[in-house]
Length: 353
Image (cartoon, rainbow, N blue to C red; front, side, top):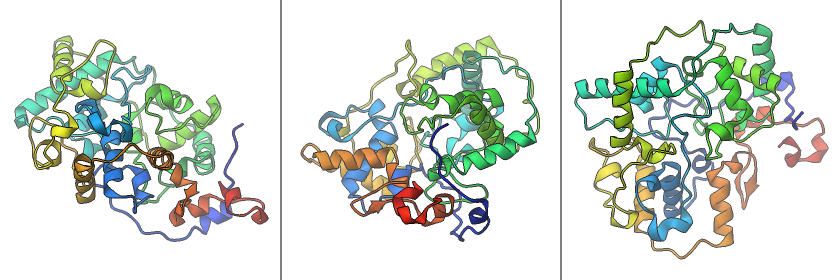
């Protein structure tokens, strides 16, 4: 059994009130939310990596400040996503999953062309995935065990506690619309196989713990997905679109590679991805702070990061600051503190992590 964060039920019921946050309309990079005083150029360098900008744009002199976040492969370790959710997510990622770092890539298309592209890409991705298998109704006892585990093994360090909307949370999205139980279990058992970027850590769950947490996360799932028949002609068209629209730049498969755009040093923040306008580039729905930070990073001509800079970048990139503090930054946020307690208060603050 992995080490556990201890959280007595009475403390949960007496949780302090926190400000409720509206769903974000821009990409959420939680480490930056925990580190608001980070200088703009450093925050921008982090965003250039977390938004996968260097998948298209060569980093050049900025390379030592940026670490590309590897996106899931289109064939993600045997994982299957429900087709109806895939359609919505491809059509409008920020609407389907507020806070996602996935950009809108269909903005240059007409409404009719966009609908056709969404359908073709959905058939391509579903064809690449395993069959769903029989629907398994959720076990209420497993849901109850999963609820307790979710709030005690560390999930709420980054994700919302149940019935809370905290502004700095990594969005889960509508998981009940997205996954089958078996496939979410597979993800929880080995998250790095699905998301090799490492932003979701391996919590060391055994199979039964993964089943219970997955059951809790899918607790609103009412039944099986509607039937879906793959159209090979559409899927073949989707294969071509996956390359031509630039999807393959981030979601790389062994035999797929797309085009390269201008290097970072040649970019004009008033144009393209940072302009906020629709076009043949990804549109991220960035906040003003995010746009200004990326512009500052692009203009910056800084020396190589120092060891202290490297530590700061790594801790922010991987959201280590959600639990740990360094140089007066980070640590458990007040809105999450009720879920981080200890059986021995004499051990101090660190005992609750």
